[in-house]
Amino acid sequence: MSGFGITPPSISRRGFTLMIHLFLDDSGKESQPTNPWVCMAGYLADLEPLIALNGKWRQLLTLHGIREIHMKHLIPITGMYAGLGWDAAKRDGVVGDFVRAINETRMFGVGVAVQMSAWNKAKKDHPELSWGTVQQFCLERIIRRVIDQLHTAEIDDTLGSRLIVHR
Image (cartoon, rainbow, N blue to C red; front, side, top):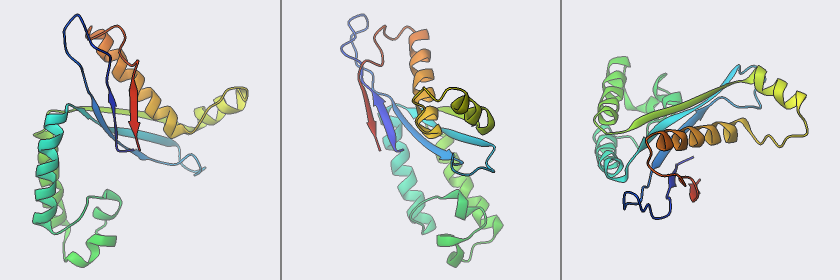
């Protein structure tokens, strides 16, 4: 999932349109029976901070001679990182650079975790419901919570009426 934007219709009370960008990653798969949890988390931000972060991110990738950050391979220094000659100290320094770039960006963290035993029981107990995947549930829950928070902030009564999802 690369992101989504919520674009409400014209907001007459405040006279602006709101676009929210959400970047997520998931961990755990419904198809893995030994997996006790499935999680989805990421960041929510306006466009301008994300443009700035993207520029910093590309500079850091170039500086460190890598094309992406993939923690599954970066932490054990395998895959694309294996041939770079890095040790744990170098890896930690690289991770620190990217963490600082994230911390310097005005964003809001979001996340959801689903306990797979409860998920599987609910699906078994209610087969008449259309469940989708656990990742879809996580995404929908995050979107719902974002909309709830915007309503709490009294941004707009009709928020969520237009939703664009990019995959």
